[in-house]
Image (spheres, rainbow, N blue to C red):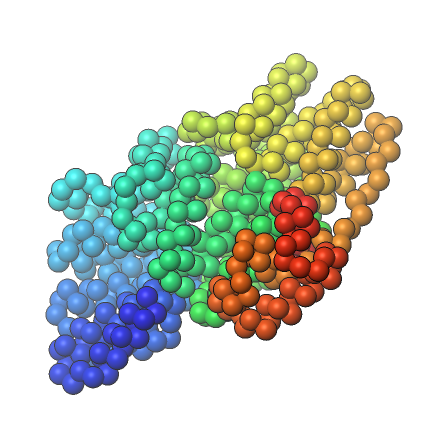
Length: 537
């Protein structure tokens, strides 16, 4: 894509006639955007806008203007620009107009509370009024119809449409172009209906496609997406390595994105001194960029952090804010379990019950164990006696059939805490010991400490975790070690991470020292799996 952009930009420079020059500048701007050269794209768009452009080209220029605004900050300016471009395109190119409404929906999702006239509801209403597909619905049409129904009518009527769209992107015969352009929204719909396997399949498929196409403007998003799935599965080492890669690419391209994966990882680790400054920084940066999703995400993570520390009133305040925004989106649904736990522990049973009712509707659309497992865990918190025990057992059973180890560990912890309060100390020890071992292995330090304190209250002594040498790898060192372990040479690692081979060698030397090894061949033994190496930072 970078080569195509350079070729087209050279064509613009060599074209003197105004009409062809404007058309080629428009094509060069599009290629530059996809290659991550945002300043060049904006300059070429200005050249194209100087014209002359026909009506369709003017509409395409409006679309590109919105796309550049979104890629630059993912903030509040892009949604309204994209809705306007879609409306201009409707009489000229109906299929492109529908695709542009999807761009607008995506931009509105990121802008959140800062979207203004380009809100999710505005984008959804405009999309519903657009002409239907002229032929058989394409994957993008399935997405648009499902997302519009989600916003306007709710989760229950939208669920079959969303599940069908997610399945097409996860398993269907879609083109590379369709995957690259709409795959991110496909992950949104997969998560909305609690389809873990569809979600993981889509992000893995799209990350490979983005790498192969050299779409640097999109690469940080997809690397982060994979990192988030690794965090949810409890592989903090792999996640930290991917985060380091995403940040290197973003720095090289100048693209603006909130550090969703980094703040999530810090929150689940539970070291307040590390996590809270990052949460505050992401909230500040997201507000400045007009990126409401970053604010909401950080508030959800803050709620997890405070629940892990047992500071339930603070957790309740953060969860209440996160759950109250954009109820159509998965983050508000993910914030509900934090709200329920914090409210139940703060004596606010009415607030917890209201949130449980919302979660019942959200999880009720699931056909997997993920959503119902979370719901059972939360319902147990608000139940007594045999009912509570039944729901705790259901939560453990369901979540053990998912890949989400942190959620399963939390079910064991809550079950153990309840058993201890019921006076069943031996049963409590079994659950709390399992929770402590899982948290410790994953690297969820605050939750591990909470489990340790509960174990001590049952009369069992548990040592605090000591920091292993391999825990001291920085994210960049861990990323380089992971790539070297996979067989990549120093030049190949350098190209992927935007470093010099000399810098890669420098970091590898530090890795060898910290892991007490002397060659690349020993990395497999020193880093046998993600759980054994959870890099800091």
